[in-house]
Length: 198
Image (tube, rainbow, N blue to C red):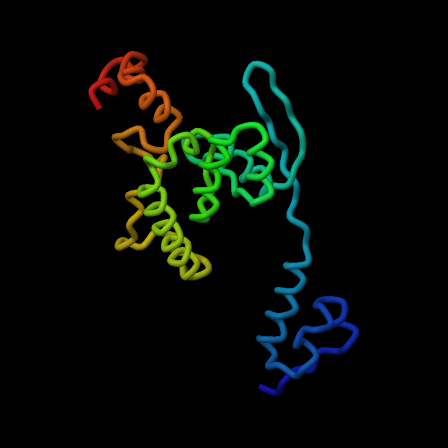
């Protein structure tokens, strides 16, 4: 087929000026480029969101923002972690020199850490470093997945040090880890049924 030249005014309307749309392309490629640029220019529609069961609160927001917000609220999936700077640590020294010393350990090892884990960073440092290494490897592997799927983690991927994790049999990385270390048996007293023996 003869190449199809896209008029300059059409390429300006559909694609950014830096696009290669102004060059001559075969007809199917030109059509795909036109449709693709038009689709990318569309705004993602906002979605209705509802929080709460008894006291319902509804509003409209971007679906990507809501997905990330929901994941951050599920505390068993994601835990907020701090990335300290030297300036943060200098400010902490004025109020709590011991906590600032532990924060310095996190900064020196480039570890994002939550404040419960910060309390016991010296004891859990080997596991946290292994978790960091495994998560970096997982990010690299996930970035290699083809667009359009299948979206499955590679079988050889090891994330055994990542905590919290679904189905884990220990308290590492959970909200109960610090309580159990400071008061052995405290978590067992709260649990009932089969979970108590885990």
